[in-house]
Length: 479
Image (cartoon, rainbow, N blue to C red):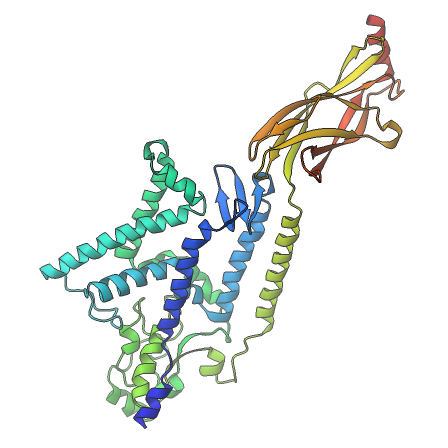
């Protein structure tokens, strides 16, 4: 019988979490180094004011994508919470990963400062000199890892290749050095001294989880129908020993071993019910599974829902209207991001009118030439240097009559540098015969590359102001 039970013993959730931690860590380190045509998978570069997303570069004028990206992130986390409780906290959150690395790997496995991973309530005896030395070594190791983590974080804002160039001259990049040091100091304080108090008292996520939960939310949950009520309705502990529990509830299966309590990183008793401090790490599920497995019984603490365990209304409904709603919203957001991202322009162009509406000069033949001046701000968002030029698209009746005075030939713009150009448009002769008012003519500026096989083109709408007839005649008479 014991042999059969051993064979059926499930893989601890802790091991699955370690796999997820390893994958998340690897991705965090590797992703900043992945580039295609010089573009990153994700990079928010404040130096060049650009965003690289899925290997496409967007300039600051195209950061209208950021709100949708942030919405996607938040709604994903909210949806995960409705579906699986604080699964993000227990399985993905950097705070949790860092604490596991420091407490379970460095302090427990590597230095033997803590006796067992399964006992997170008993702190090391720091009165022993050898433990003080081990603690100092543990902190020293974490300081190194904290600076590595801080550097890795900065790689999502500064390309790693440039990062390593900058830190070779720290005096010239004090903001970067200050950011890395500041983040590292926070991580040292957080992981070594603040510990899980961050999850309990600082993190706002725990405060909103109770609003998102419903009866089908999957979480670490104690089954009082089998184990017995250890706590009363006012959350006061009733029993500390199994014989006390058995005297009141003879069929209660809880052994009161409190393995589920000693293993909890946030120091709660899962038998008390839903608590804000629970991060869904499932350590308590593993602990109870081990204890009850030795008795040939199923765990009293399981990853399930109130509907299935407490209310016993049936199986957990994973695909319920709320979850489907979150899924639809996420699909819509992905569609919006994809649609807006696909319309990314190859270069950016802002067209501003000069302060003076127009000027009038005389040609060699004596005809009045009306000029309008503009300020064009052009930014090449591609990785290559290109030559650009402009053309004017006027209304059909005026096509070809509004021309470019300056610049007279194509010009070169290097990547990610804003180039300011004074552009002068002109028209010769009487374009509009209006004796009373100046005429504002809607025109379109076509900006395009002249050195690519297929020109890269953008269009901008603006206006050309043509003076009233009296102004032209007055100017002509003055001449």
